[in-house]
Length: 93
Image (cartoon, rainbow, N blue to C red; front, side, top):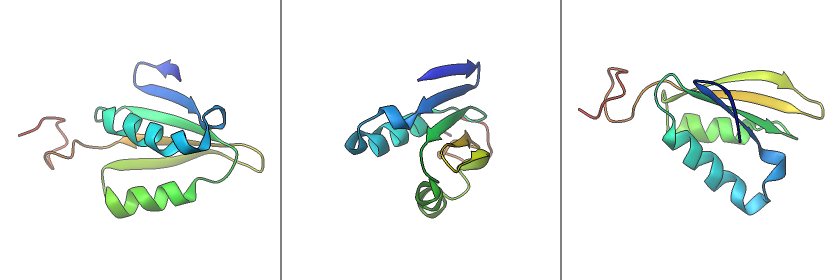
């Protein structure tokens, strides 16, 4: 994992063994504060992850393709709000 700036991390998924990928991604996403992001670097279109986030965490994360293959995909996932409230404050009230 690499720090791109104060609010964005970068994670090259290609270097992580397959069974560890999703637990690592979801753990990292869960730890993000609102407004912070992670850029995932993968060797395939991670669209199944997008659908999973939309289905199970609707409105919690933003998704932006930074690069779209054919050999490398980079996706920035940004935490929009804290799941504890709908006011986008990051608090747990």
